[in-house]
Length: 251
Ligand code: ABF
Image (cartoon, helix red, strand yellow):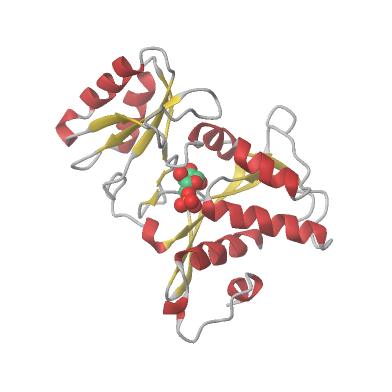
C-alpha cells in the first residue's frame, strides 16, 4: 500500500481498477525504497524501469536522496536521467555498482530472466553483472514456468556482418526445440539497430529451451554473437506487482 500511495495511486479497495502501467509503477516505487544516499545505481530501461528512474529524480529534487551516481543501461535512459538532473557516470569510472533496478520480459520460478525485448540487453547485462544487488521489477504478466515459455522472443545481439549466417546457426542450435530465428525490424521493415550498432536476432521456441546454462554457453560460443537476453542467476530480488498486491522474492 505504501508503494501505491507513493506512486500517487490510492490504496485500492478494488485493485482490479489498476492498469498494467499502475502495477509497473507500484513495483518500481517499491524498488526505489532500496536506494540509499551515496549509492552508485544501475538505471534500467523500459516502461517499468522508467518509473523507477523518474522516482529517483523526484527524491533527488526533494533532497530525500543525495550523492547518487547513475549508470544508465541505454541511451534512452541516459537521456531520461539527464533530463531529471541525475548525475551520470559509467562502468569505467565506477566498476562496482551498489544496486541496479530494471524490468524484465520473463521471470522463471528460480528468478532467471529473459530481457532485451526493448533492445538494451548488452548494456543491461554489463551494468547488472557488475552490481552487488540487482532488483527486478515486473507486473505479474511477466511470470513464466520456464524461460521462452511465453511464446515471445528470446533476443540475441549479433554483429551486422553476415547476420543471416549467425541467425541460421542460432536456429540450428535449437532445432530440437522448434526454434525460429528472426531479425528484429522496425516499422518500415528496416533492421532494428542497438545502441551498440548491432542487430538483434529474436529466437522463438516451440518447446522448452532445455538446460539454460548449456544454451547460454552454446549461444556465446558462436563468433557472430555479442550477447543474449537470458540473465541466469543474476537477480537478487524480484518485485512482482499484481492485482492482489506486491510479492517480493529474494534469491
Ligand atoms: C528492459 O526493458 C528489458 O531488458 C526488457 O526487455 C524490457 C522490459 O520492458 P517493460 O518494462 O517495458 O516491459 O528492462
